[in-house]
Image (cartoon, rainbow, N blue to C red; front, side, top):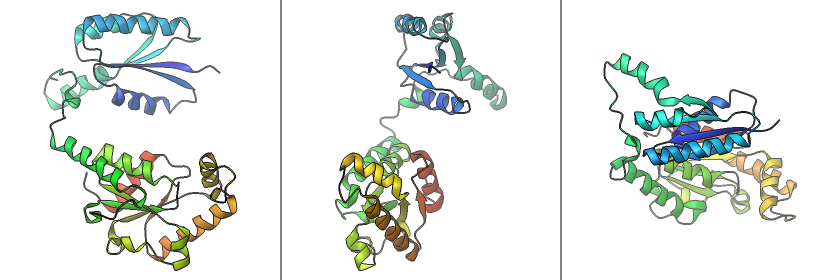
Length: 270
C-alpha cells in the first residue's frame, strides 16, 4: 500500500502541528510520508504553499491530507481554497470551543509560542542542553551536583538521546554515565556517582536488540557479540537492582515514553 502524503502548513516551525498530526494518524494502520511547509506568514508564501500542495497531489495516489495551524484569516483562506487536498484545521477545531469555555477571544497571534528566545524557560533549556552534552557518557564529573537526573546503563542502551530529549523538551539537566565491565568486576557503581544515588535512573535493553545496535557501530566485534551483550545487560540489571535504582527498558519504548517515565519516577519539577 502506498504511503499517504501528509502536509503540515504552519506560520511557525510546524513542529507542534506535525507531532499532533502524527499522534492522530497513529490511531490508523496506514503508512505516511511527511511534508512540512513552515513559516507561511504572508499571502505570497501562502500561494507558494498552495502550489507545493498541488504538485504533491499530482503525484499522489490518494489526495494529500493537509494539517494547518494558521491564525491569519487571509492566509488561512488562501491555503484552504486549494481543492486538491483534504484539510484539517487544528486551530479552528480547538480554539472556538476554548473561546466559549474561557469566555475570551483568541488574540490570533502568529508564532506566539515561538517568540520566547529571551524567556527564562528558553534559557533554561539551552543551559540544560549544554549540560547534557558536557556530561554525556561520563565525560566529566564536574558539577554533577547540578544534575536533575543521572542516567546509568550499558553502552548504546539509549542514554544519550534520552538525556538530550529531557534537556530540549523539558529543560532538565541530565547527565549520563555508562556501566562497564570494570564496574561489574568490582560489583559496584562508578565512584563518580557516590553521593548521587537519589538522582540515578537506569536504562536497560534486551540483549538481542543491543547486539543489533552495536553491530551497526562495530560489526563483528566482541563488543557487539550477543553473548557479551547478554553478560553486560544481566550484570548491569543486577547492579542497578542491588542499589535500588529505578529502571526502564528502551527496547520497545520511545524516547518520549522513557522521558515521561523518568519524570514521574524522579519527581522532577518541569
